Length: 268
Image (cartoon, one colour):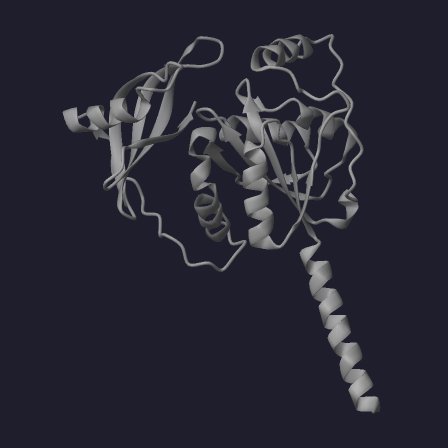
């Protein structure tokens, strides 16, 4: 009987330890429209992590134009950062935090500033993830490092809102590539050398990006790599930054067999 009781106690301890291990990862996100929520839930489900949405006391619940005008007013130097609603999660219990947000004005959505003002991520490993119209992962990651200077900000994940149906597959790919899971996913090859733009490559760019409502820029050169069921193209593009100054941008296009080419992101 003593041996049976001891075995039960050992099993209970192992279950408790496993539960504690899982609870050390938190998916913390802000989502205005529900698009970023989709990515957050895919990450939490795959990792078995805890998950929580955060918001500000006076939410951005107006129309698109009203949100734009409010953000512009709040971006002035004299404006106060909106107050954050209290979190349910105890951040001190987590080692790793996946931090999610939509990209607004080329960087993380304003509520992330509210989070940074109230919550310390000192000593935490933070993995950004975001949704966007065209891009913004790289710029928002740089800004996160300034907003959370005592956190260890790692490489993040981003996806266009127009491609949210691909989120689950691309989240699995990202988590495997970064060592968070043992999934066997697609092996990513290196891109070829940049070369002059051919008529075929230009046609693929125009088909993928032609319907995007904002100017993306003029393609100058291209390289490519094979992908499962198709080819991924990387274009050097003459573009403009948010201040209207000329910049060299990179535009990614995924062309799979039997499907129209997809504009996946731009890096400015």
